[in-house]
Length: 245
Image 1: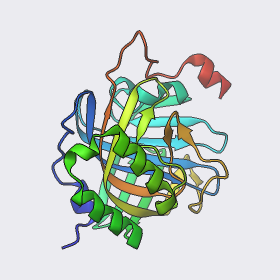
Image 2: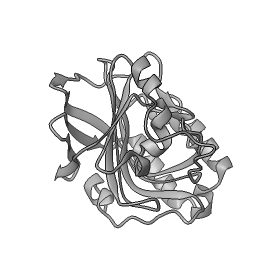
Image 3: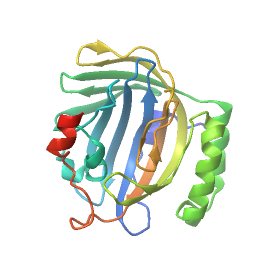
Image 4: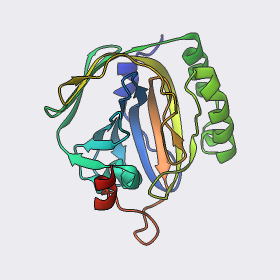
C-alpha cells in the first residue's frame, strides 16, 4: 500500500544514529515562484537541541531572507542560517493537513500557504531505491555526495547537495527519505499573492545547501556540527546585514 504524504509526515520521528545536532521530521525543501519569492518549510517535532518546532523561510524578490519560527532563533533554523538572514521572527507557525496530500501552512497574520503533493515516476523510483538502501549508507559522506549529483538532474531541481557547510559555518548532512513533488495552490505573504510556481534564473542557496528549483516535499533526517560560539556565527542577523538588505 502506498503511503500518503500526511501519513508519512505524521509517523513517529527517529533521530539519526550519528553524532552532532540531530533533527527528524518533514520539510518542503523549497518552492520558487516566478514572482521572485521563495518559500520553504521545516517541521522537526524531534531534535537534539531543544523543543520541537516549525519554521517557514521566505525570500522576497530583492533577495532578503526571513525565518519565522515558533521557538527562539538559537534553537531553530536560524542557528545555522543567521549570517545569511535579514530578519528572524519568533511567532505562531501552524501546519494542518486538510487531506492525505494537502497541507495548509500559516504564519501568524503574515503568511498563508496551501500546497498539494503529487507522485511522479521519478519520485516513486527514488523512494523505492531509498527504502532498499542500508541505513549506514545514508550516513556516508561519499554516498550523500553521489546522491546529490544524481538527484538534481533526475528531479529537475537544479543543483543538489546533501552535505557541506551552512552560512553560520557548521557542516551539515541531510537525508531526504521519502519524496513528493509539490504544487502551490495559493501563497500570500504580507497581503501579496506570490503567483505561480517557477524556477529562478539563478538558483538560490544557503552556503553549500542549494535550494531546489522545483518544489519538493520530503520526510527528513538531518544533522549538523555542534554549535561553537568561538567559531560559528550568531543565529540572529547582524544589524549591518539587515540594514544592507
